[in-house]
Length: 150
Image (tube, rainbow, N blue to C red; front, side, top):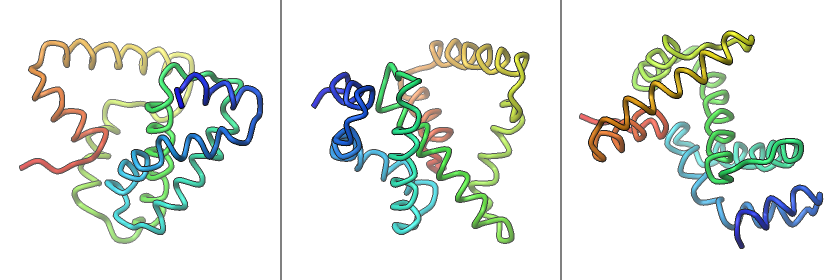
């Protein structure tokens, strides 16, 4: 099933949208979440929360890229769960990644901060456009998929 058809199901409030989303993107979303949490039970809960969040977000939002839309949702939910579970015992690898991102991404939403987020995204895209394909892939693997690189 094509993304436009799935999105149309959401817009029509057809509950098949959730099962079709899960069929098409369940394994992908599982991988995104598992790279953060490393716990199948937590990942399954994050998947369920992702499908609910997608249901509640479409409409009014209509994503241009459903795969990335879902990845962003599950990634945020997984990081929230990670922060909750590791409040006392810190994972050095994940803390380093989060600290690196915290220094450049604002956490409170104001108009100025929203503009800064857009400008930051443009700067990152400009920076990445000047990098080799391999370096672009490494950047995404490190900061989106939280993979370790030695």
